[in-house]
Length: 329
Image 1 (cartoon, one colour):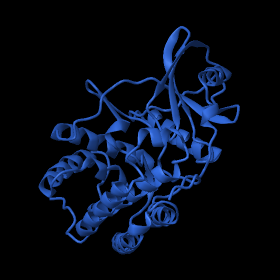
Image 2 (cartoon, rainbow, N blue to C red):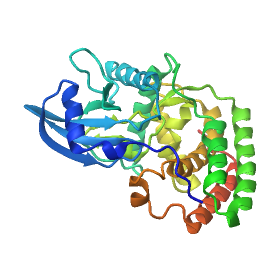
Image 3 (cartoon, rainbow, N blue to C red):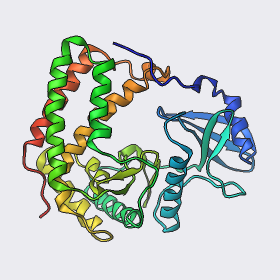
């Protein structure tokens, strides 16, 4: 069953509004604008008179508070000031990074080019491990006060409850409810066993948020940064068979340990965190379904076939949670 939730005013974000917003922040545009692929927020490349284009990110209304956004911006600048290769938001002449225009909050970034890393290349994984270790060395210096934490409740329980109430087809409700109950019970067991220390993390280290160009690599888009176990920024680099993941993990940890101490006690959380991400992603699509961009971009979502495959994927995750975790040798 579809139910419209969280209506938003993105329909009012016209090209003229984007250009006027950028100029309201003190930057003179050359009237060139290019929409970039982004669904949670709206992102545009905007040409600037006599300078390199800027990337303008317009935040999804009501997702973050001003305090939460500014906390992310401060984290980005802490990393940049420590020579960690991230892309922090642009400051205007007054040092501001968060701007508002006609009900939209937005920030501006310098344009950075690059391509996704080759996660099947062990040298690339070693470099990613080093970079993540450097990032975590700064991240551990303090914690977030306003941004949320990644927990079983925030990513798992709330996702399952929302989907059961609004989206899961009646024919699959019992299967989904029973499975997610068992899965979340096992995930809680893993967290209780590990008792991880939460710290600031990038939070969304998929290949689209890493730009590789020549010998340079940058983390971008800390929009999902939050408090979480450190391994949240590592497990997404792992894929394939268990043997393949063991090889990948060895390279990541070797690089990571040059700048931070990897905690092998968090390894039982790899499949727990992967399971939570799968659940959270489906709920994210569902919560955004009233945004016209989502049905156009994800036409396969919210079909009976999708939910059947989603349930199968969660069953596979439950099986993986009952297997021994990866190891560091």
